[in-house]
Length: 88
Image (cartoon, rainbow, N blue to C red; front, side):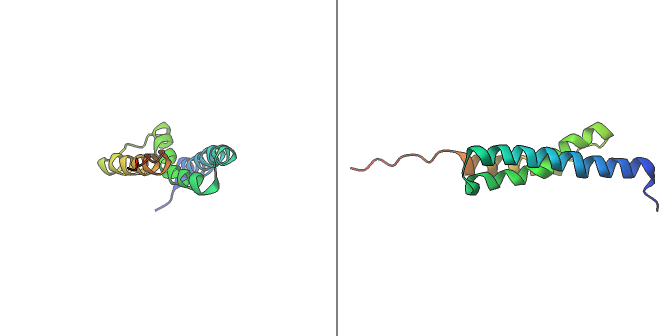
């Protein structure tokens, strides 16, 4: 089955625009934090891609929302400040 012109445009839109947006955001964070803490933001690329796919008529599935929760939870857990342990 052929992809067609609109399918090709959609693929280019998602592949180029979303990836560029995610990498620009990642490089901004990298300029503000250490590389080890910034690398977790690369996991946001699929989330940006699926979110921006709404503009071309894609409909999210329940698995999208589950995956989004996992991604955001992972980013939160890796970026939060550790609690100080009181001794004594």
